[in-house]
Image 1: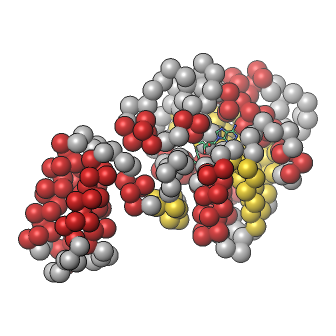
Image 2: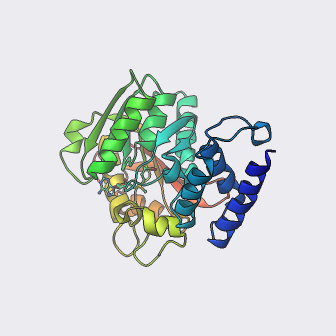
Image 3: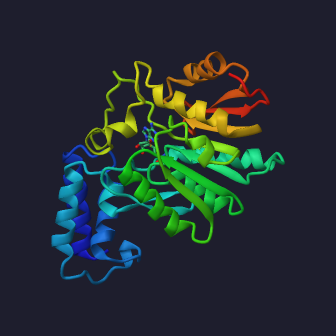
Length: 292
Ligand SMILES: C[S@@+](CC[C@H](N)C(=O)[O-])C[C@H]1O[C@@H](n2cnc3c(N)ncnc32)[C@H](O)[C@@H]1O
């Protein structure tokens, strides 16, 4: 490895460690590659750009201030896509990808996925993945925040050109949505769900994710998820799939919410685990029952 690159990697890792960054070696390497403006493996780099030291120092400073890595890079991976990331809009998380696996399992069971909605779409995360992986489907994405809705449009334009999609800037409780979105085969959502008293531990989340993207409202954090479930019940066809992410402590509460507050509207109500074995997704199928 070029001595300058080797020294920079060591110093960068040390600085990030001292700043309390959770994955210092990984982040230093990613920022180093960004500053080197190369896609070559580090061992093969034999020249460094003139601006390298200055650029790397500036990137390190931002990360030491606990600015999320994805925001510094301006992008993040989600399933097989690269999505744009902007300040003020929730950064897509890898665990959310599981919601799309659930949709594939639904389709593999012979169900059609012609119309799908992503409620609380943020940067368009799940909507983009649906448009990419279910190219025949029409996708409707709902988001209340103007900056997030604009980024969702940008990401859909970037990742789903030629696909059929629409971003609606609206609150999920807006009754007009049921006439703006046709009957759906699938409704997915990663809404805000953190309970009022639960303060996130990571500085990156605390300082950079917008509050309205985190806190679900009410003591249990389920005010917005409740509205999401109500809208899903109105939008879904009989047999349609509902998948909603939640906190690992909300498995029982979200199941109870469907059973008690929307009795008869859903069947096959289950909780799906994430890769770490934590209860993270409410999964259910719409019944024929229109009343709840
Ligand atoms: C946890 S973030 C998830 C964003 C995206 N689904 C993802 O996984 O990256 C929740 C999003 O819901 C939006 N939101 C919060 N309350 C809402 C509401 N009542 N109606 C519509 N969107 C809402 C927030 O602005 C935020 O973008």
